[in-house]
Amino acid sequence: MSVQTTDYTVSEIRSPAAFITSRVFIYGALVFWAFVCLFPIYWTITTSFKSAVDVTQGHLIPFVDFTPDWKGWRSLGLSPDSIFQTSTVRDEFLKRFMNSVITSVGASALAIIIGSLAAYGLVRYRYKFAWFRNEDISFFFLSQLILPPVVLALP
Image (cartoon, rainbow, N blue to C red; front, side):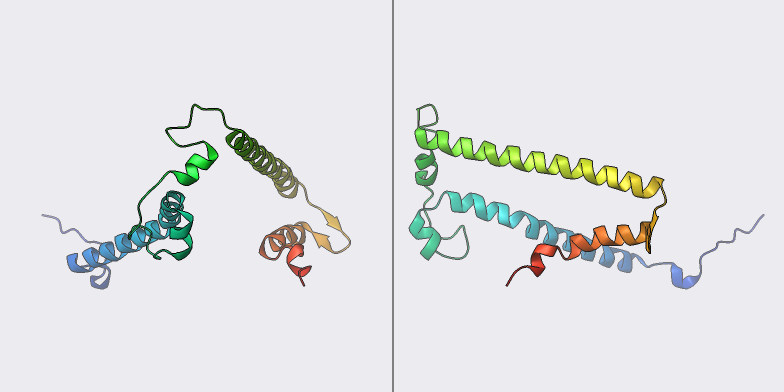
């Protein structure tokens, strides 16, 4: 009969109560973080169904004491009863919305392409110009994310 030995010490073996407590804490933190991330979306959607008076003078909790209406959506021509009617307001809104989509997608694609090329160049080749080296250039790029120059231009 052989005796099995383990590499674990007594202090490394966790009790079931400690395991359950850690899991409850982790899941509680995840639920809280999901609430923090999803609440602004919920707030935006419920506010779109409020009247202007309810938005400016209503309760802070979005689901308390308001009657949903399609007035805001109807003014854009996007309510269910007016979606198939022609509307110059809706056409103007959709034109501006598409301009925003094209601009944001184009800017994101351009940033990804230029950033990928710069990252490839910094990783693949070694640069030395005066006292600048690859690490200095990488740090400069990172510092532009932390504190953009436009922040320094603000009065």
